[in-house]
Length: 393
Image 1 (spheres, rainbow, N blue to C red):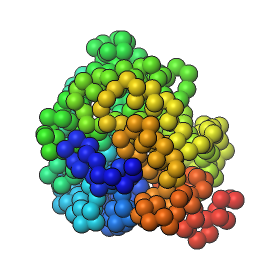
Image 2 (image 1 turned 90 degrees about the vertical axis):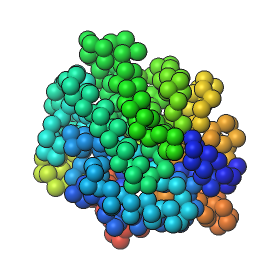
Image 3 (image 1 turned 120 degrees about the vertical axis):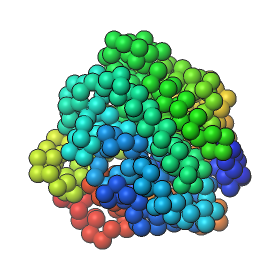
Image 4 (image 1 turned 180 degrees about the vertical axis):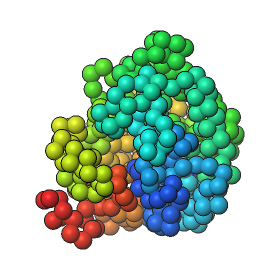
């Protein structure tokens, strides 16, 4: 089933695999780098149906990292180089867009915003409550970003409405304490998402697929739970989106619920330049980023609840790294699978599954790649000289 052509919205993919939007950390100065082009080109030549460029910010105010892509009109030529390289290898090109909200770095973004303000220990940031005018401006930023990426040749856009970034912050009762039309009742907490999606769909037009990444659960008590996520899925189906990516976790409260396993905090601290962050992460990172049990397909059980509630295409994600589990997911009614760490380990993973060279990824799920990407380019533990020694720092 994996190796059959399938459409997501208007876009035909050569198979049912999608490179998940795992942050590459390859955009120094907020620009597309040759390293980013090489990586996505290698994933495309490795057989993926569609590769997704990760965590591009729609506005300066949403930037979390100095090496994160910022979408503006000046970036069109470099984005065209990226989509051209992907298309030449036979894959479709998608890009994930979002806004960091309370996870924005004020030194880079100039401002830090969230639905209700309040201290965020995981930044650490102290965002202020976003104003009505700023809400309208950011919705326009999403719309403008889609027009730019459409002109640059992307086939699909993935709107990041999960993981505790700005749209997710509006959806979650943990971060949304507003008393106006954007807070309180569930329908009000969904308002920002709906307005963003309508603006995105208008800008995308009929030729571009619009996909939304949502949380199944925020991953902690007091966050959004599965019952509300089912309703979000139904709402997005009614809005006419072309697919949902079913994920979970909250970067400012339950980060390892997103990725599972343990975070190698010493590695994360090792690559940080800010001395305060370096030592704070080294000594307290294990408390703030508590381990979560890893098992392949860890979102599957919750995702099945969404599958039974909606008919639109669904994308299953969550540590998928074997042909057996991928085929099982597809047989259960999911339309596509997203893969991240297995493609960091080996960009040619999909072709090797197809040829029978491998039946499972050699990825050890050490999360070394994740620990590195917050400060620089992602890299696999098994391909970096001296990385095994680093793990023992």
